[in-house]
Image (tube, rainbow, N blue to C red; front, side):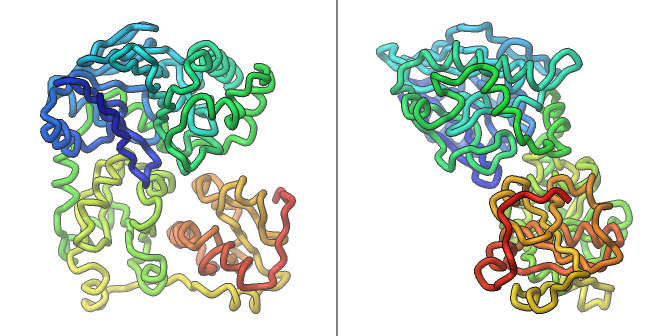
Length: 464
């Protein structure tokens, strides 16, 4: 028996490959299928099942394409409805895979169809459980992503509590927990940086598995302080219930080279995503472009700040990283990338076309400039802000930019910062698109400000 975790850091997502004898299965695959096909070929196995823990909101899964290319059966839990053919597992249904068995455990709460898959080894001992977003390492899935007219967050949280207590808690302490996500995912609040653990240890360190935790306490804890989910989450759920554009077609379209003339034509009806480094964007960029650096949490932030992820997208990106950029965007449902600028910004500048800049200053320069008329904007998450922030700063999280950009004071100079300098440049580019130009980016963010200056820090939350 072989169980392999395939972790994708930029999405904080885990896919799992299981092999026993000549048969194999995959749990929660990403959009691109070739890497799985290569693994299946290398392992000289036949893919029998594609197990999906639930309709994911934070990425588009590749289950339909993978099933078409391999003949494997797609398996969802109870309550799942989709456009494509799949097997609906009933609670406690057993699937044979070579010399091992996999049991479907219906665990509603994160979503109504959420299902965990318990793997029994060759001697029928509970070996591991693939928990999807039902149970993370150090946390549980948020219960607000599947709210229907007849169900509230509280209702779903109560279902989640019962699922954990009745289906997962009774398992052997040695059972390995394999979740769908780790730290950095928006599907939970306080996930560990570890990507797997055993159940016994999680009972000690994960509040959600505490034997003393009552249902009302659980509901209060799991629903407290939830940030608004990104705008693209419902779209990704819908896409995971549908048959989507083939991945190969998305890549081919996105890798189209656009000369300056063609790029300018598409610019009128497309969104420009500039994938370079913050400093390069600040020094010179195409007016109206959105900065989302490929070296950060590229795709989730792109999908979070674009008003319509179905819009045509054109890229300013290093030619050697075009396929990477298009692939990562497609993972979150941005399927309409139509090409990239040939020669990049150098060509644009050499041909004399207009550019724009963002004023970006060091923490020391910020300390010298700051005064009572300045508006300091913190674009980090609320939880980061609560752990320490600049005195009298205004909290406007980047994740809610489309709702809160009007709260920027256009009559004052807005000094914008995040934790390390990545998100603040995204915010500045978005403000530029909204014709709010009285902005200054602070290089290195809160981390650099707190380390290099004597600007006052406050640890109590101020609601602005």
